[in-house]
Image (cartoon, rainbow, N blue to C red):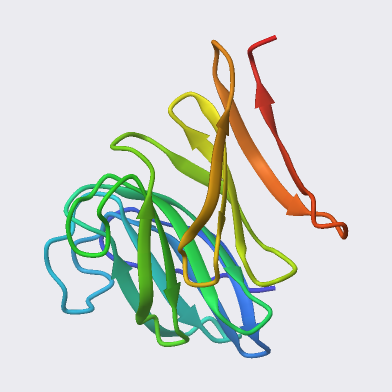
Length: 193
């Protein structure tokens, strides 16, 4: 059992990790460090996303900062069946890789952004869960405004449908999955009873 300390001079928080291959792990999180990751980009703000790769010995292979001039938070990450790394996160930025409240990004095994799409309102909308459907579509569950939010996108992040559900109080989706029959099931918190 081992532990490793990676990051910069300020607060950095790793929130997601996936095993990409037997000796390659992809990590996503939030950074406040101005000196890490040092990927040569400027214009980033507080609470930027980061994605990094480490080997099985804990060595940092590469790291990238993602986001815009305002805060970017709450990354969710999956490895798809065809070997893609997909990240969803809340953003309040209006430049660089973010244009509205919630971004979805695909990165390659070097951390380079392949595509980036945004959805939502100018507010604190976010997804708590990302799931790969049987046909390769992306299913996302979270919160928009004060309502439970479910979204289906194609494999490159284009929205196919979305729905928000709720009453007079706060509702929030925590998980989404697809049954063998193709039906979508969402679980979460319902306060309007």
